[in-house]
Image 1 (cartoon, rainbow, N blue to C red):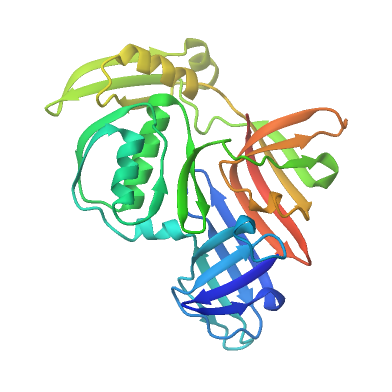
Image 2: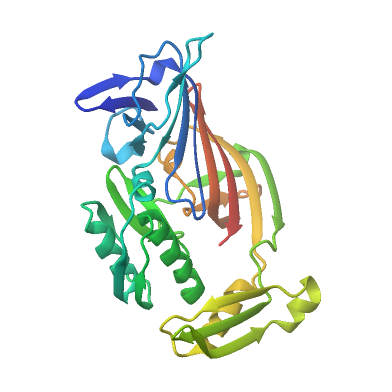
Length: 316
């Protein structure tokens, strides 16, 4: 593990001075957050960059955090320096688009708008079209709005993968390297299920001139009896097949997911790079069964040459 600070051409090695270091991501969150406390540190400047490398080499392939420090502060008693940093996509939340007109595949239109700022941003086709004049908002808000629409219309979730200054929208579970944790590495593990994001009724509406032009409601009757009525309202946008959209939405939203919380300790540099949205595998206690999971939140820590990760997951 290596930790480096950079501002312009300046580079300062911080690895041996770290008192505490943690980073976190969660589903729906654009940028990872990193918190650091350093002993006997030089004064780090706001907007200087914090860079974390999972291995011993300063290689781009091993870098898993790259972004600006936003609030360096020094303890008057201990003289330790603490700071919070965000990944580079934090700037998407600090800049506004102005009014923009979108007309085409939602993913490629999002790519066009964000790339127009000079950011290396790529997004796949999301499978639905958008034809709308969007009000002025932050680029981060525009990204979140379109990702929420993608989930509503297709049932697919996405996350934003960072590689230094390159941002790529990736389907959940689309990570190329899938970590495998053995059961004996798990400090703790608990499995259950959650109805927090479950809906038993879906109503899809289509608007024309700010008036409802069509409405379709679909219900999961047995699930309503079991856990109650929970209705989700969906704007169909340009989609004219309201019944099909309602069916797809109900099928996805009425699933009660199996959830799992684990704490895992390891020293694998590749596994240290995981974030919310990644797929992982767990080799269970019998040594044969391998289960598949999607990480919904991740908090990583590094101390004494070892990574500790608290993961919240859904069964894939």
